[in-house]
Length: 312
Ligand code: CP
Image (cartoon, rainbow, N blue to C red; front, side, top):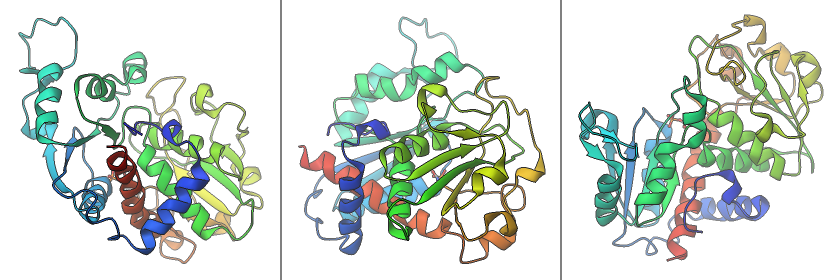
């Protein structure tokens, strides 16, 4: 594997989950694999988990991570081809990616969507420009439309906590005060479609995710009906896809409560807004897997880096 930019880069998710579990049992076993190799982490947006867990993963493999907050600390990067750069951007991606490639053996990039320009967001201009103009492998640390490190993490977490051979997994929308991207939801859908699970999505009318991603996964607009007999409830807000980037609904009755959750386990990628997305009683109970999920971010990232390093 050269790049890891999408859940579609996973050839067999069951094998990957199994390999991640093995890494988790002995995280330092491959400490010499990344010796004298450098991982560059470029953040166009904020992060806690991705920033720290991906560095930890690199350190476990013996790599040296170097981190840059691109938006705040670097020159403004121009991505357009043929642009007359007489505005706010001072450096073109062609030079920036080539230069960073000389310092790093792998480059990881986080770049969120605009949520105002659907066509631009779906073009994945930032991520694809790094793939095109860097001379080293690229890892997606959450792009405009996908968060594949999170999706792999979630598959690992469900596999670890499943009590039946084919658990029922529900992806539920929940309300939020800000317009949020579709990336986590998209990658979770793609990961679950590769897993042996009974998978349904529930969201209000007007909030269906991109049909090219949801494909034939059932979408139920009644949350209570969707939650029936669920083993895992994965919760995430996203803004409208059809009315792109808009908040159409803030109905608090979609918030996750202990009563609604029943015997199911609660999952969320974090950060999560308490008593908006989910009530305290869920997060403060044994039903919540959010801390275990965040821990697994290290092993998902470590597996991806290991595969890239082994590919040479
Ligand atoms: N889940 C996740 O990606 O967290 P951060 O945004 O803090 O990295």
